[in-house]
Length: 168
Image 1 (cartoon, rainbow, N blue to C red):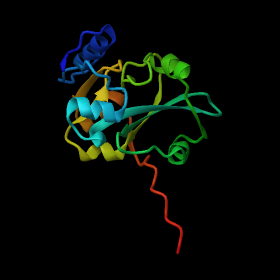
Image 2: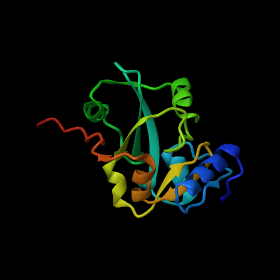
Image 3: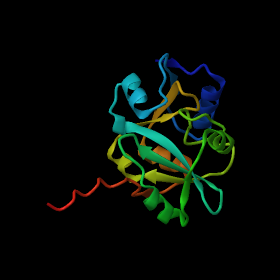
């Protein structure tokens, strides 16, 4: 782990400093693209990773970001109900156009376009969480309260419930 050197990660550091979040963007030699990779590099649990997942509203075409706990699968049905429309998957080109970042490095702030953002309520169970800092090798720690303040988003139940076993 070393201080951020990549220009995009340094831009995230600048945005964090400007918004009063006293944290340090760090970079790793190994990728932190997935929750598992990030947790292994950082030395935390997968659940403490604040993963950014983008959807596209099927009717509006709007970019919708869910910042979820790394151990949760996101329920498209729950998110769709919260935003009032069915969701489609966002491809790599859509993600880059909407956020300014490549998949695997999407930060929860500093987006290319305004996004609708929902936060996974399960992230509130941790004192510190880790989010991507604009590249697939950079992350930063913050508190759930700082994440909510940075994004202006509220907490929602977005977790996909485990499948109910069939009656025997």
